[in-house]
Amino acid sequence: MLRFLLRTGVRRGLLGGSRAWTAVAGVAFGLRVLRKITGSEPEVVHTSRLRPGESLVVRHDHPSRSARRRRR
Image 1 (cartoon, helix red, strand yellow):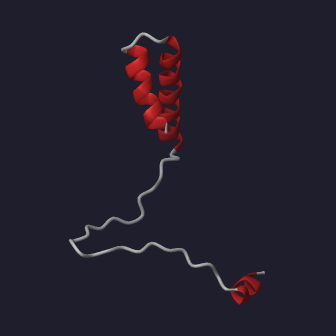
Image 2: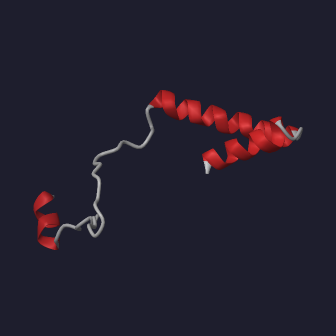
């Protein structure tokens, strides 16, 4: 969403002359810089190349009731 707002703000604001979209582009750019500085960018945990016919399943298993009781 942030990328969309930045791109649209630059196109309609800086290139199109709209003050409102220029402000949107400025805020979106500021938020992107802030995310870079604070390190809140998503971290890549795993990468792999899949060949044709291969698939990758991502799932999150919930702990059983007995496992939750033991942790308390």
